[in-house]
Length: 576
Image 1 (cartoon, rainbow, N blue to C red):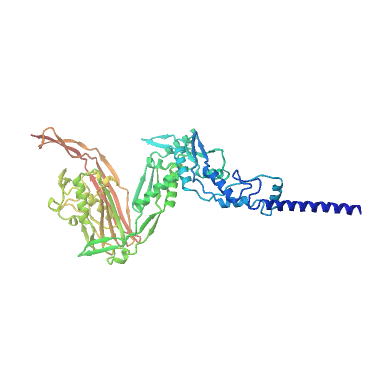
Image 2 (cartoon, rainbow, N blue to C red):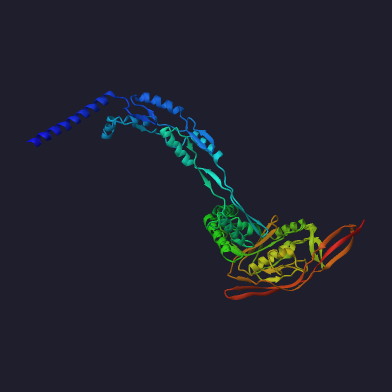
């Protein structure tokens, strides 16, 4: 009985407390109706006892006058008035709901008069004013790093040290500014930066120097069809990474170089064009695939080639330029009714150091044989193709070999074209009917070839002749670049499966040049000297030319040339 009475007393006591608490809360809610509850502040601004409009006015005034201070190495900045956008209604709503959310913890805090501070609610995104401020700060605090540089002087390698740089952490700065505004902090913010390390340790410097020295006298040969791009020591060293870590190549530099290849090598598809009148082509353009250099795959191939040069004793490595090809809509097969379907032969030569008249004659002779259409079974005469060679037909005087002398004569430079045609005809596997070697070794024809692979012409005594023994017509196309001093002759036709084999030329019996010859010339003023011939060593050269088709040898010929030793000849003026 005693226990029951005690239990009732406790129950009534608890019930009384609850009723009292409810009464206090009710009186508080009634007293603070439309006002913020005691202890409530927003970003440090007290709003307790204020209505929403009153709180809005007070808070707006504080925000309008607020400036967040930013510092870096003694420099100071303040945020502009429009640095952030405050969502005022959302900010006040979260503070106003305190004590009105039917949450027991709110009521308990109210009873003990616990102070509570709410942050500002800010709009997402960066304002233009804040962006301008961060850019201004970046222009002051950022110091660009200086990359280490690898210099090649002769065969010597020198690595020039880089310097560290300073980079503004814009994202972190923006985050700190937002955090500062949420609570209207008074303490200044240190501007965050990061260091871009480009200074090399002694160990890394040694690694880079060693790699660069490994590339001295080495080369990469980039290949795409007939295109050959040679990268030697300076070009290779430019690809090296200067970080000194495990990465041997700088991917950004490699990619940038391949982008340059894209600009120079990318081509759109070319539809075939083909017209001829009375056996002479008036317009011809073979169908050509469009080409697009693959940046990622070509860069990888280039990096693989670099690593091979660095890791082996190899002096030269080949790199295939990886491309995507797009066929033309109109192909050569669709427009060609004469059996001209593809390129079957190609020859090239260079003529650096030629005098202007010789360059002119090479271009003129190239146009005379360009687009010549040769029926099957017909013999081709180079002299007939170029026609009469004289000043009357447009040729200019340039040096030719005549009567055992190098003299000025009309058409000097034709042998450049006949030599290139000789190489193209052999590439196509055609029968060579007549070919003459030069009297002495001429430097032009050895720029991209060994001695002996040349063909001289002197009308009417010496000609270069070959035969079209293919099943269809053949078409001769010339591509002359007078700026690069490079001549290409291409032969188009129908391949019948023949395969050409040209051996490496043999050279023997070398003899020194003859002594220099000086001749008096009354046509030159006294005291003047003019060189009209250039010294060349004598030698013998030969190479084998074989053509097979379906296992049968259809051409087997050895071309031999005896080069006489040659003397330099100077004319001494004796005239008035």
